Image (cartoon, rainbow over all chains, first blue to last red; front, top):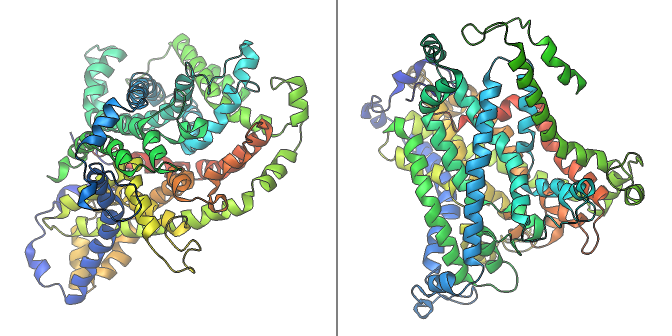
Length: 316
Length: 307
């Protein structure tokens, strides 16, 4: 499996010769003190940054979620309140379940609409057609734009008074404001970017598929559709899993666009905006916000584990 | 764009037909395919084109004739947006954040990747997993401890005029580096593992130190992924919105991506002005996109194409 989608931009040949494990302990022993200091620092400095600013906060979030600390003053054992924050979040916090629902809808649209669309376009553009590069460029142009900027760009289309959509259709809908529509409007804007990104990933995956597979299939009389679904798609399994993980994680992390539109209120609540609202601003509910953060961490850890299993397979 | 639309007719006598994948005499499906792609591509470009178009139009004209009209062209929106939202300052802020963050990210990630790829320690896999996973965690889930940590971290005033890491550009650089190092370390280590170990063996024989091997052998050999990652990271960190919005409280410290909100009025929004602002903010990334497209794309796919 690793051969079929092996590293695109890497020098092809010597990968097999440099298997770890063959570099013996012999060379390690005769390293000088200076070399050992170099190696230690090379590992230590970046590790301290990542452990201190990512993993320590992640663990702290879990820990703080069991307290009622308000962020001011010392944290004492009296602050520990068990699972009360979780109970409150699940039963006593109106925006929680709508936010979970919105995240799920977000995921469903990314997964069922944006991903297949990106894949479909990649398949079309992978053929030898004139101007393929021009089409590709147009489709992934939104990928370089920030989601915050995308929020502004789509406001020109979705705005109630000045937007193009209402001007053309003659309707008077507040696309980003009305909670019946705003989630879907935000999803249109997000998909606009996501489709190009997914297309890019699949184009790379398709380019790496062995051409002889297609030839064999066409000699055997497979139609293009059969070839894709029975041969190409299964061969691209690692890419499929990575796209799946990227889709899940991005749906969970979705934040910028919604924050630009209305700071995640009135139909646009997402789990990420709820966490942020509980920390930034006047009401600083550290313990409660941490419980929401821990829910995010738990969901993401499943997909991170899946991702690590796929991408690190070769090293095991 | 008319050139683009004309393509289907000329596509038939293509010089390089791929054997086995395309037979002659299937003009009609090709035409359908091209028509479809042209429509999709144009509709994909439309939102950007619409923003660019309206950024050149006068607010008075569009409010009189509606946005779906033609005319009223002016350059004033750009000068107004630049002055009103203090774009000069915010572009500088973006540079102060992006440039050090990208350099540190590439430096740190190449150090870790080098150790993981060059030596076979038992902890290599765990180390790499720790770095790679860090990049995938949702930033919002780390917000509370980071916020508290930065607020209580006292730093000298010459380092940050807020006296703490909160509300300082240095804090933003740090958090961006921490998040992006994982992705880059992963990509670089994959690349470095393909460097033949004989190169290092002869360097060992010549008595080159580990540091020199990293600096003079590995890094020069890694120019392609480093260029790709630099392009990608410049775009990503320039585009970063969440941390800048929550960790910087005074608007004058905002990088350009977060400062666009300054153009949005509380009760009234001049969409032509906002378009001009959006175009200005998008400009650096669009330049990167057109000038360094190859690097950008290979950077994006580097992380995913190892199965």
